[in-house]
Image 1: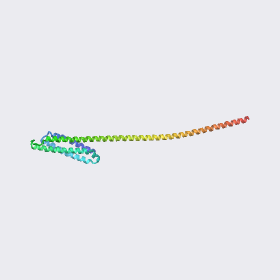
Image 2: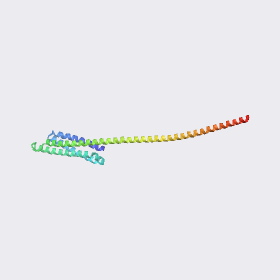
Image 3: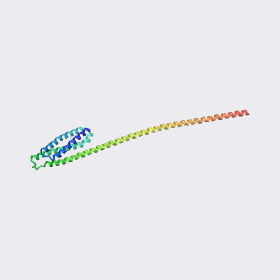
Image 4: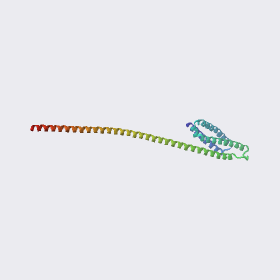
Length: 218
């Protein structure tokens, strides 16, 4: 993906320069104009090579889905620009041949028509790029939302584990309390039995003392 973006940067940079060159040729004449047009024609070959490399790099369905529309728009712009340059060269040669007396369209008329078509194509490329940027932003937002959702799920899972651990701890505490209560009840019962036995022994001793005393005085 990074390589394709680098190719696109090179392509856009060259095309921007060529657009300026074509606009400059509008005010040029003779050999100067022909030199500019030949330069543009040569550089368009470089742009075609770049688009071919981009086409080779679009190997996966994901890359094709992302770059196919933009690649098609750039290819259409390149085709239109080639046609514009070829027509300008042809018209310029005809104009020079007839010394400006030909009844055919002047280079400026051809340039104006081609410039309008090129402008429409550039607008189309811009719209495609804007659409791609919006898609990328939507994709980033979706990824961010997915990350936030994943964080929320992780937090909920952690909280559930904490609640389960707390529940288990409370269960163990309840079990310990039940055991303690049983122990206390057993101790209380044992204490009652011991007190009862103590009072019984005391009562027997008192009874024996009374019997002994009664026997002595009788």
